[in-house]
Image: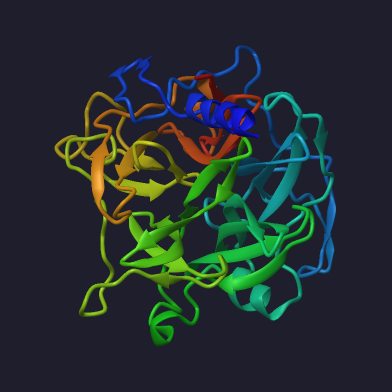
Length: 381
């Protein structure tokens, strides 16, 4: 048993990020990378005009993924990577005017799609939660974690519920990734309902590598062991939970949000710092992957990158104090390069990361390509 434990520890250490170079210069020792696009494989998921689905809200058949397929979450299950991606149904409507549903696909090697469901697995239904918070904008931008609660495996999703009025960071759970229970806004009852109608999105739950897979992990926050979620679009905030469903934002003594990171003038993230895939506990601290958006004006932007473009960054938070930012990449570790990452709905260029999976000794990063297709990049330590 002792020998097996030593081998397991060595395997876990080998899976942690190492010092490698990237196009924009060397990465620090704590960062993950270099992530490489598999040659000839991307995009791995594209719109499908043949997929149809009976929408319970519209009461009719719709082509639910005919417009765009993008912004995927991912998790390993039964030896395969399962990808849940956002799909939009109306190519004639502009950004924000379509209904989003979540499709499902599987891959054994992390790159080649072996199976793709002909119908969505998560969508606005006839429930009160859907009618109030999800219709008719839909369910957007999933991040997924595996959790082990009371000996059971449960999958937890954070996503944006969009009712065409207020975007709300929401949660859902599933035993199998196919059937989901919608729990409503993550902050619904927190702080006496103060954040019930607060516009928010992008929840990144802290995970750790366990038995070769990323699993939701508790950390010590202000003296209490809790699940922790970094969240936010414009800036990075935090929230805690005992059950991964109901979350309480971290606030200061006056009840205001505590901001852990902001956009930086003159950097690739000068406009937004939007939380990405589940954060990862490592030997260096907690690594948060995020989506940085460049400013729209030259005086505020990093002019080494196109204005208004989305690239990906990493932040390092302290293991002892997960609310304390220790370090941050000054250059993106992943940026738009290919034609399909620079065309589509978001022509300024977008790689929008939301899924991170440890599989077969490698790290697979799943991302949206210009709000139109799904891509993958691989890092092999």
